[in-house]
Image (cartoon, rainbow, N blue to C red; front, side, top):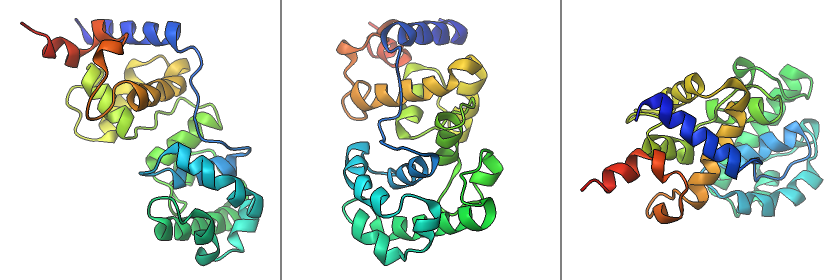
Length: 214
């Protein structure tokens, strides 16, 4: 199977079987999504959705959060992973948005990654989900699933994975494909025990094919 054939089969399967694919993080504004994505690093979306309602009620805007201290924020997020670091990152992020961008979340990779706590993956989520750009955020799920299926070939790092996926997926589907791969990795193609027998991608999956070579 060629790479082109594999991409075609995978994309067509997802389009038929997962027509709606969206972030599982709860948010009402670009700022809230940015907060949620920063908090979600090495933590589950379920946990983040448990802590953000009270946090967003207390600090609904960048201006409000910029007036808080890291200790203030910590009290709302202490049940997430690395709460001390994330509390400092959120305060720094809010201050940068207020000082540099008038309280509004910017819409370019360069501007987003200039904000404390915002790396390329987080920036790509914002560009894709909020601004509808053809951006591919590569988290651990996307990185793993792309390599397993064979959409990438032993990719050495997330940036190479991102560039490979964007080069091979139709532009209008890049944002949705990000969610396809995340959700597939979260619920089917899991890290330790992938549920291959439940997976509709078996005909196109390099990992499954190699595992079942006689």
